Length: 470
Ligand SMILES: *Cc1c(COP(=O)(O)O)cnc(C)c1O
Image 1 (cartoon, rainbow, N blue to C red):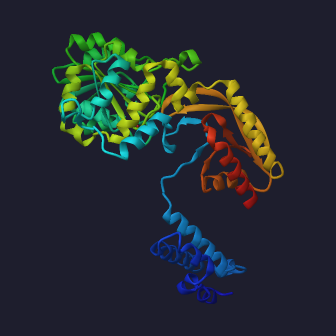
Image 2: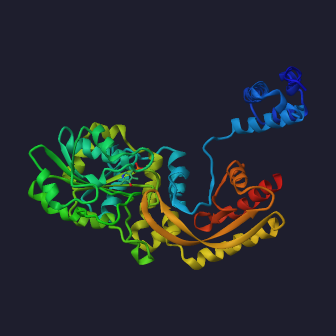
Image 3: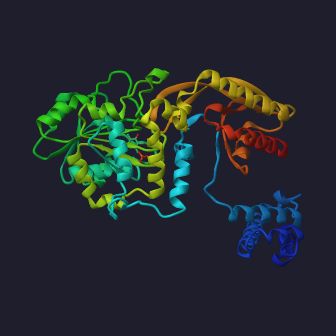
């Protein structure tokens, strides 16, 4: 068929509205949605025909049935949520693109409970007067970290901005050149510092900074000494940096606040589980660092939040900064954060109940038996269309936490017989419940470390649908 006849054979809106399949979905979706889906599908079809070369359209079939199918799919998509659950089979635990930490059960319950009714968010029940939204978590943070005081904001980037804006506006922040890094998602330490009104004084060289470099940079214009965790970035080899605790004396002598952005901020020393040693928040506080900031949804395993702990006199100043109001944390986040913090009364309880921590410390035996279970489930349905094997692999903590740390894990490798591995990866990603996987040569890898207990059947069913649909 030539272009002109193809274009004139595109079904009319009314024809589609009268088709049985579309009549059937009129009970499910609002008319406006269906109309938008029809117009979108027809427009797309017209455009495709117009921009194709005539010879490429030979054999192009334009039947009403396939158009109706596309309208139905489009209506479904238009009326569903855009922000959706996905299954993380990548083995990257704190996956920023996939929402970082999965909340613990108690946090989820707290969010539902607090959002379906009114709450004492800013109300002192005993006194019957206005209270502070920070009171719900401040005492818990103080108890866990040993700091004098605490305040929380939207995320750690906001925390850094707020701290510098309060303690260093119009003055100089002394920071090592090796720590002026970009931490994914265009969070650049120097740019945030600029926004706060602090002036940056870089000391040392990219790979080496000494105590004397900080000392030389201090003048009457200095506002703070700043340490920043380099997170997803490491300089290896000929390097030298000054740990924050060694700057405490210098900061005291010059009566300057010492600030450390530790990024991930763990409350638990995970080195006994074979993870590289990283100073905990408690250690930073007890070393005498005046203000420590960290994220709520990285190693802590809670909701997105920026946590600021430290000396009361500085935290009080931070609380009074009008910027705090602009960066203030929402009640759902507070509910989730409080419930997560409650698990930290006991290390063992935190490791068992907080999904992020549980995934980090999960034993090889447990991972192996999970991989066996998944592989068995997949083999029972898919052995005719794919080769399925258990392989030893490596997971990552992610989220800029410990970039060099590789956690030995088990994954199920699936090698499709009738399609390419890239096609399989793409179709899994576009499935009703998207399954996000890594690929390796001819296989997709399903790392069981980040797969949740109730996701095994969905993975099997999605793989089955996708492999059969190809
Ligand atoms: C991740 C990170 C941030 C940003 O924290 P968000 O909670 O994502 O805003 C800031 N500083 C460091 C060192 C980080 O690792």
